[in-house]
Amino acid sequence: MAENSFDVIVIGGGPGGYVAAIRAAQLGKTTAVVEKDKAGGRCLNYACIPAKTMLHTAEVFVEAKESEHLGVKVTGAELDWDALGKRRTEVSSGLEGGVAGLFKKNKIEFIEGEASLTDDGNVKVGDTTYEAGKVIVATGSVAQAIPGVEFGDRVLDTWGAWSLPEQPKSIAVVGAGASGAEIASAYIRFGTEVKLIEMLDQILPAEDKDVVRVVERTFKKQGIEVSTGTAVENVEAGKNSVKFTYGDNSAEVDYLMIAGGRVPDVEVLNLDGAGVKLEDKRIGIDEFQRTSNEKIYAIGDITRGPALAHKAMEEGIVAAEHAAGKDTHPVNIDLVPGPTFCHPQVASVGLTEAQAKEAGHDVKVGKFKLGGVGAGSVYEDRDGMVKLVVDKKYGEIVGAHIVGNRACDMIAELVATMALEGGNQELSFIMHPHPTISEAVLESARAVDGWATHA
Image (cartoon, rainbow, N blue to C red; front, side, top):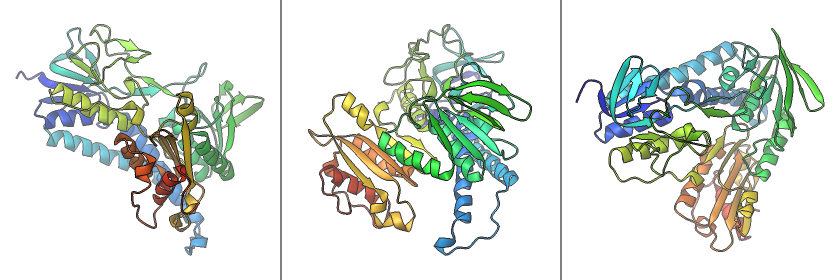
């Protein structure tokens, strides 16, 4: 094979891209990854991993300050912002090195630069054109500002929010989806004054209302000022602060942080020239991630469905396997779990109760508070809940929703149950270890039919 020729070229070295590349290499394909920044992409270096590193510190900081009733007295607990920033960088750098090591282990060539597609479906990087048997596009997404507002020194995107050189005294977060809720949740625990503003009628708009009530109540108890059904307008960024209005209110904060959504990063790809069609501003794909040009696949944020790293990873597996001629199983978009790592955590899969009814399901619901199981008291996780939305006819679970300190780990069991077409009846008889928070899943399954033991 020619020096600049590969069986598979992946454009983008983020979670979806590097997983696709590794799978292609495992299947015996000569593989290259083109990345204009660092191995691991935005998620590892600027988004998911830095955010969760900061959120973990917020959790430990609060536990240190408020642990006396547990029998642990801590005097003078302080937040060292410089040390926190150093750890955030070290965690991302270590994982970046790990991805680079996986490329080397799997004999994947890492090509630095910005890639575009040629008209014949190959890949151009700078002045060099690389021939590809198949191409997997995994360029991800970029932050989107709100109308009439531009990012700058005082108006930040999510990476700007997580990488400030000093702790601000006050912030406003615009957009209360997963990213905005996480930013607000971290900073209020760091000791910063926080306003969380959402244009829609509830924070975490994609989540079930019963779950959201628990989060909003906790946020307000923590000191977050929550405003819903409110647009941010008249933004004036100065040298040291930002002024704006929201509804009938006006405010001035150190930083305005916009977490209002992301758009596919596809501008430089030459999609039209390569015969790759868009659908609703995203790349159109079939069930195996193939685009309208059958030589080219697309995965992750640039395709339909939620912009989540784990979705991109699984789509990368499908694309790589199909490109290699292997039988594969398409990703079920309806079973992509949605995690939010605020405090308390929120995780869900499938339909909310309202969505299930709108879709025509005759539903019954099982709800169980985490405080009802012994571990809820042991681990101080009493306020959350597990909620199952079930179709009455066969007991099919069509939606699962968890709020609590371990929700993002707990949801995997429910994803598996739904993927294997299990109903609440089967889940009602699956033994769960005691004492664990996961027992609330068992109890919620039993609650659907009215026989939860500890209700």
